[in-house]
Length: 136
Image 1: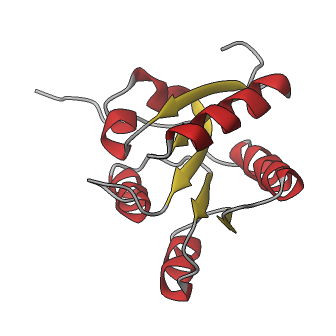
Image 2: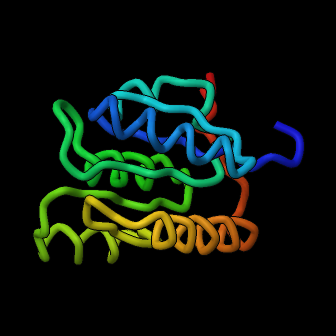
């Protein structure tokens, strides 16, 4: 993806995915959208993602479960959680797990862009995403 930062959006809400995809592309970012955590995990996009925008509650694997799975695989992607539910326990857990921000839906464009800037600035300080290798 050359110099364009790739942002992956994982949310089961199709209208939100489409809205974020349009906004982020208009701002010059590369964007990939996924309807589930499982589809993101199984994608080739994983290694290219520089910022992950992740819904907390989704059918199947939840956002916090994906965060733990990535951490378990030692994959570090700056993550912005988004949620329609203000649950302090969840917010404190995802933030303790290394999230950049947790935004309550509906969130402002400004708050999202500020969080993305923080995530991308922090990414340069992190090691490149290391995907696990199959060893014989």
